[in-house]
Image 1 (tube, rainbow, N blue to C red):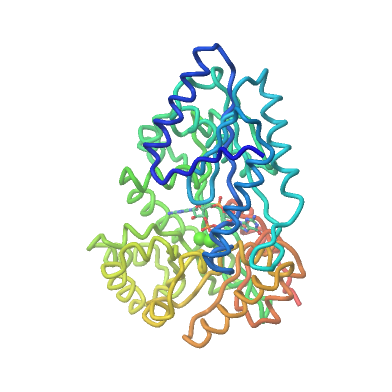
Image 2 (image 1 turned 120 degrees about the horizontal axis):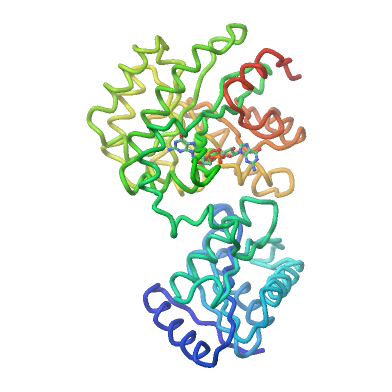
Length: 427
Ligand code: C2E
Ligand code: CA
Ligand code: CA
């Protein structure tokens, strides 16, 4: 075994070191592959089993990577749960995918961490020098783009390709295109039904934004929301979303009313002093009662700035608007935070729901969140419900609302209306 793993706490130092490595091989006219390996649900592992287990996993994982690498390969730890390999002297992209297969094979054996067996999965993104780029930062960016594309498709790894260009946020003036997207009506809301578990009736739907860019085709919210948050364009997008959702809820068939619509809000916008008034006037304009609107805010972004946000949330709650804490369980909330949180609803993060039937610890976390939440008078929503067994288990645990592919995919307004008209109560 060749012990050549490099640990970097600082990205700049890593980039410098990598640059030297690349320079050396570039001069020799070699082809190189950049392989990014990201461990799935690493945050969940930390939350459920503790940081010590997380650290042990990183060490054991690094060991395995080291074991399957050649002496000349470069291995470094990149982010929280990400490793970078640079493979010199490859003939073509096929060689790099061979390396990806080797990595995946090395994970078939479970890891023994703190006396417990853990199976882990990863996603891998690959870029090739000189085809895809010739600088370190660009090569890593392209490998990241490939990794995102692997994650969005059903595959575990992807090599950067022409098709990825559509998703390549780095080579794209996305801000410029976002500016015109609202004017050109390139956004649309899709609705994903939510079902009351104990009664089987429709509770409402979550509004999920879709961008059909004329230039780039369909762009995922994961990709453009983050950019819009940084550029400040998120404000315009949020108001478009709130208004569209309030307009469209009034078109939903009366049979299942009163239905609720849940809109995703970036925590940043809560700092806007006019936020509550703007919500009030939007409700007035469309004639929707405050009780029908739920605002979803992710736990992690809320925790970045609590004081300003909490005052705004309290005002909204007083108005009757529902407040839901999204992706709950991944933000390391303490009990004290739980007590003061001005919310009516917790949405358990999908990663716990996906594994709850296979993993006792996940089921335990789900159960604990439900019990705690009920103790504080909070409703609990489970999202990412993909099969009937999970649906039944959640019902047994006393969970209030379910959402997920088992019930329905997110769909455009017209299709959602049809879905509502045909919905039969689940037993
Ligand atoms: P989120 O709020 O956690 O939304 C849930 C995501 O999980 C949605 O992805 C949904 O399509 C997907 N999903 C639902 N059920 C299942 C299931 O059973 N299995 C699996 N594997 N996935 C499921 P989507 O629509 O791509 O949205 C991604 C994220 O983008 C959202 O995560 C949210 O954070 C953000 N987003 C979406 N619309 C908006 C918006 O209007 N405003 C803001 N600020 N963010 C938005
Ligand atoms: Ca959400
Ligand atoms: Ca979520």
